[in-house]
Image (cartoon, rainbow, N blue to C red; front, side, top):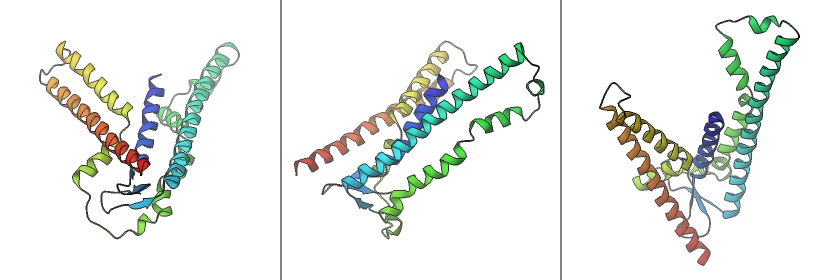
Length: 219
């Protein structure tokens, strides 16, 4: 269950990071796409944005579902082999242990990623080539506020909540005296405040986008 939640958070982070490359155009309907902290971005129509976003999110969701069922299949296969070994046969390879077993098992579980990652990278890079932003010559650095907004929009809310939750748990154990050093609580409080700050900045960044989109609809 924990692995499924971590996988879900990772999936939402990937989608948030992709979406954070697009910001509503401040002066007309559409978006500005920028893949880095330099340049003014290039125009992307609302239709292009929705098409690109849907294509990427569908890919990520479908591959995440496949990986989930791939793990389930491997678990069922492992249990089945164990049952067969106990009741029917003596499977020698189940009893032959080597120091590479854990590496082999992990590599087999992640095997589909060898096929998915190149496909995902091409889709992630698609707006860069489709919109021509790889030919953008403006190299001035974006304002610090814009860069920060992009960073926090690239973090999923699930990731921020996880950071807050883990920090609170660590603070609780620190107050209970579970750690050798009494100063660790200050570290955990600092991490908690940092994630709360990220959550607040993410809320403000998305609120700013909603205001621009609302203004676009009213024009």
